[in-house]
Length: 271
Ligand code: ADP
Image (cartoon, rainbow, N blue to C red; front, top):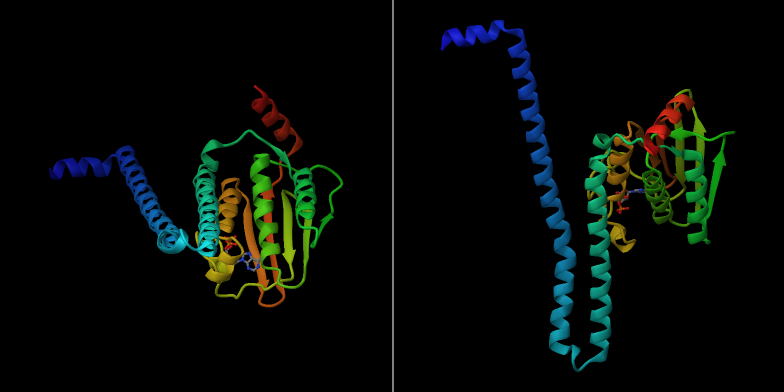
């Protein structure tokens, strides 16, 4: 058997193969660890709404038949928990799909400028009590390799958060520009801000600075992890600058497509 090991040691190709194989095993192990963490997190998150619904059903069972007030309250609370669970399930699906972005290697392209203009307009319409402004430094379309609906989703998550955590100042500034090889977006609010210790954690799955507060706003701690997974999947970057009490700026950069590359991809997409 010594001889065989010697032979393997001297065989560069085999050695390389073994390295690759070990690397693959490491990646599989990491993937499995992540999956089991995810299942643990999900079970934990589902436990609260299920317990709340169970509690209300017990109330209903005991007193609901005779007391219309208990009936109304328990039904309303249970329905609210169910709609929360529905959005949690939807966001978990989004998260698993966002995981696969890189593998799909989309031929889809989107004009980030057009998408941003549209989303800002839509969000302004949905939130008439806010001033949601777009500062657009571009003179032309800014194409990136991304599905249009993914670009929309990223923007909606960030603008939605800016609104949710705005406190009293009902303003959101979105700005759009390009540098030599990227299209850059910033979403700024003047709300509660994020403490330095929490900044690195806000992109983690299910992380909320204040659980009760996020819950009250209909959040479940998945928005930013979905946004990050999407941006990473498209080889972009996302970061945040924030200060407690004065607000946050979330920045996204996506690789800018050259006109030639865009034409190529659009041709592929059409075929
Ligand atoms: P959630 O559903 O709780 O909003 P997210 O993943 O979108 O989940 O955000 C995670 C946490 O990061 C939030 O619970 C909140 O504490 C914090 N956060 C996100 N965006 C902002 C913001 N614009 N200002 C202040 N805190 C924010």
